Amino acid sequence: MTVGIIDYGAGNIRSVVNALKGLDVRVHISSDPEVLSMTDKLILPGVGEARSAMEALYRTGLIPWLRSSVQPFLGICLGMQLLFDRSTERSTDCLGVLPGTIAIFNSGKVPHIGWNSVEHDSSDPLLSGIRSGAYFYFVHSYRASLGDFTLGRTSYVEEFSSVVRSGNRWGVQFHPEKSGDDGFRLIKNFVDLC
Amino acid sequence: MLTKRIIPCLDVTNGRTVKGTQFADLRDAGDPVELAASYSDAGADELVFLDISATLENRKTFFDLVERIAERIRIPFTVGGGIATVDDILRALDAGADKVALNSAILHDPNLLDKASARVGAQCIVAALDVRKSSAGWTVRTRSGTAATGRDAIVWSVEVSERGAGEILLTSMDRDGTTEGYDLELLSATSRRVSVPLIASGGAGTMEHIKDAFTLGGADAVLAASVFHFGTFSIPQLKQYLSSHSLPVRL
Image 1 (spheres, each protein chain N blue to C red):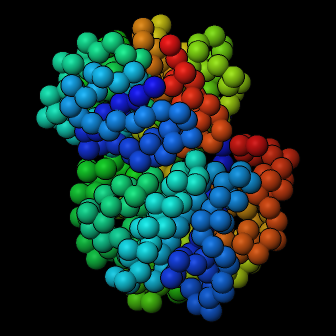
Image 2: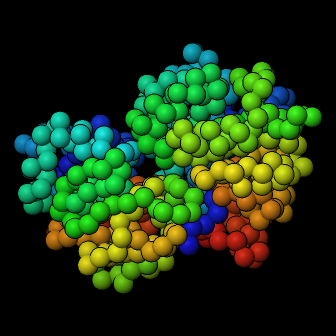
């Protein structure tokens, strides 16, 4: 099993790599579509700000390839947000594989930082073995609203999408690589997906 | 529901954890990597590592330590101490840290906050304030608390949040290491004014002090060192206590 981690200079790549170390996978960190095309799974990590991240992705030339890639894909935090049409963070056009606009929390303390619970119906393989209500570590100022793509929901100021899916693309707003045993389980579930 | 965070703080010098009182009289508290792993296993919500010597020769040792910590724990951690440039921040994040705490450098050059936040995002930036009470109110000190800045702590808290700090780590130097309780007046005066999460620091001695920091001080998280390093109470005991007082915690 090989996992490609998309390297566009905006990730906390080391944490994700560390989380994968306990699993039987080979990790390829790359921004080259030819290298990434050869991997079985893709992870798009992300820390930071939507426009800088999209500009960095644009410079890699990966954007058209990402929109049409076929492997199971996991976007983490900003990497999840980039799946949507756009973000109001500096009016950024994103990848557009999920419908809707990412917007900032309009009240409460921002960023939303800390451990919060994720409610889900357990039917998706990504969430297998993780109880509904389990805690994950969040750190973000922008959020996706609820939609047909919502697998997991979290309450902060309002309910928002904390786990999303469209076909073979998944996204999580929290940081599974920083969320203790349940986070590790989620990453293992992703690696084990067929 | 978003839970209240319990954050053990490890002050590190020469590769060892130490703890002092009012920033002096340091005592050895163990190996930072082992302590980090045991706190993570015990249910700590995050960890903070401060390189309290932060000399150039210690710098490489410290970043090596950050890498070893990142390999051992699966909870978020913040590093601070001597971080002065965007390059330093990128180096800390690249070593595996999730956030950096900035203190003296942003007092020297407040624009660093704007630049850092634009580069890595506000969520990676913790503004740390070392505060002393005086007749003029609460004022901010710099260089590990050794020098006055003349800045009012609450005014500076508002400014750092507006410039792009994602959290404020507010340390009462008067209470640091005394185990007399957090400065609740300082906390509540600050939490009423800032719109980013507030981490209380300095003075925890009992579980009640920590409860008070949340309920009376308006803190979103608490930092504590001595009580955990020296075994006054454990993180599970503390979380049970807070839960029994109706505070949301991750059990």
